[in-house]
Amino acid sequence: MFEKITEKINSSFKKLRGNSVISDNNIEDALKEIRLSLLEADVNYKVVKDLIDKTKENSIGQNVLNSVSPAEQFIKIFNDQLVELLGEKSPELNIKVKPPATILVIGIQGSGKTTTAAKLAKYLKEKLKRNPSLVSVDVYRPAAIEQLEILSKQAKINFINNENNNVIDTCKKSKEKAYNSGSDTLIIDTAGRTQIDTEMLNELKEIKKEIQINETLLVIDSMLGQEALNVAKTFNDEIGIDGIVLTKLDGDTRGGAALSAKYITEKPIKFFGSGETLDKLEVFHSDRMASRILGMGDVVSLVEKASESVSEEEAARLSKKIKNNDFTLNDFKSAINSMNKIGSLKNTISMIPGMGKFSQDEDAMAKANNEMKKTIAIIDSMTPKERENHNILDGSRRRRIAQGSGTAVQDINSLIKKFLQMKKMSKNMGKMKKNSKNLLNFS
Image: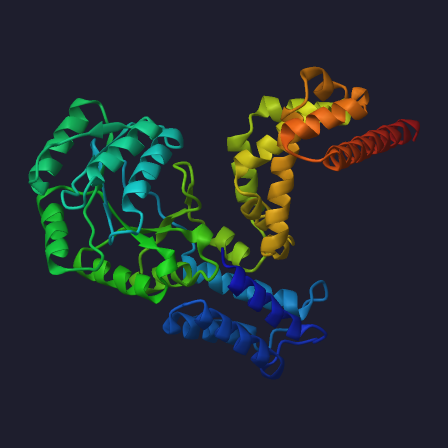
């Protein structure tokens, strides 16, 4: 996400190198490039003007600290303005109320409302230890109710099925059913249209009038660009929203909607979708998102994802085996699988500071993904004995493994070579730690 903005903004920062003071002259070219990159990324022109003006106002005349370069100081100023633009802190959902707390999910057709409703239910259940129920009042789109029911089963969430075309009556009965089933939260998935129309808006207004709604979340497809902002403004003006959920942000290299949505509606971005599966819903943190936009990674989110995806026991086991130089091909496979659990290779690399540029190389990412898949296939074609002891892999065994994995003998040789290099590195690291410890004891 944000690849195009990141690349051009970082290019503009280079223009400030070698200056002792950030001045009107040396900042103009950088701001011009940033302005152009933001507009090309579908960021609203009012947002761009405000962001550029505030950055310039806070930059001009700034004496550069001895410990940092002008570019670094400018990045800090620009980062602060980005965080302010995105919303300094996203408020929590208003669900600490008499149960069932009711969340209304709204948006146009195709924005990802139904999937978002299921993702949100899964998030509430797993992260906040809530007991949510899901209901669909989309009586217009064919199979909309069935879709939510299928997603509910996948997420193991209570689904309320009402065979009733009266939307208001369904909402009222669903609140009763949710309460009687012990649910503390009800998520209502509403109908959408390909475009906003009066009938849809009136239906949503009627729901909010007749049903006590604690949280209204607008789902926006971030890939719609400027149109997404028109949608956001209309829904907020006509219905009133409490927060925004951005979908398909992982597929949007421009990021215009993310940078403009909060500014246009004056309502916080609370969540964003980072993939298609039900676990790919993340809380929106403006400071972390600003860091990603500027290509500085997001270590905090990466650590959180890792801790959620890989158990402490597994992490400790692998760490111990590497430390003792007892790392086998089985462990090599476990390490790759653990990495895959965190997310796509592209997203994982983009969260590592200084590695954002590499994640933008589509060919390199595709090659790396293929290599990982090939590695798994090769190891899976080995016998348990071969995985535990690579020394027994003679020529005939390697030919058998190549045939079984659909690869070539050279691929097997290459994998073993990389594996041995990793073992050598871990062995050297172990020696360095041991020598450092002996040195400390001697001193």
